Image 1 (tube, helix red, strand yellow):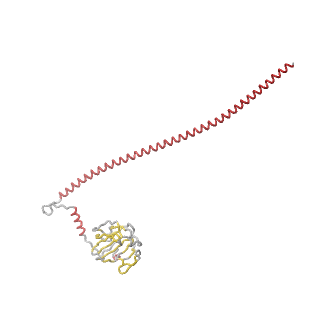
Image 2: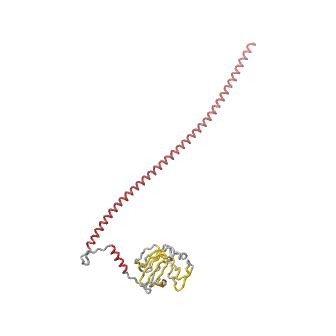
Image 3: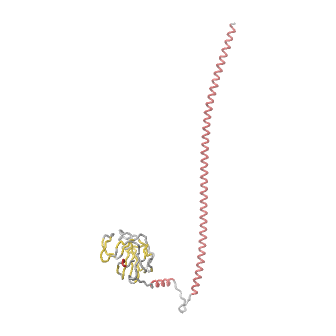
Length: 295
């Protein structure tokens, strides 16, 4: 009886050990599983992060490729435009050359036609109008002399009883004519005689001929700058001062109202008075009051 109890007790102790071992093994497996699950979650997060980074890198590469393609497209368009402009320029050059050639041909044809017409005119003209047996041909010098002679034949006439002068510019009178007493010159800060009317003008304003006449003298004087003298007939002359850019020359015949020059900057004698026209009228070389003759 005693021996049987001892044997039973040994079997119960073995089962206890087995159960304890099983529990330990289960705990180890559980810990391993939990560690594995934890590692799996971390790896999953790392994998997701790597995927996101790869996607971002792919997007950047795609964007860079798109930008490169856009730049290449713009460069190609610019090259096409440059080539097209060069082609247009070459076409214009060819067209210009063609027009120039056509113009030269036309000029040659015109010269031939003019020459033929000139020969025809000479053929129709009486070669010996005076019956001298010689052919008379007038050259350009003789024609110019004839023109000058015609200009000298112009008869100028001016009478204060029936004629009146035009104002050279439409401005106020800055200084009156005064030869019987001295007047004050602001710029010079002194009193002196004034043989002309000083008329206010605007820079670059056109200056008109006050009457029909002939330009007899053009000179540059210290006081009145560029000065024009014009003969209007019967001993009367008009002197215009403070002018520039004259469209006339000595010997020209002008009509009343024609432009004979433009208002210039004033000389140092009239800086304070400003831009003006010096307008003097002479009778037989003596200054007279222009106001008595102006309209």
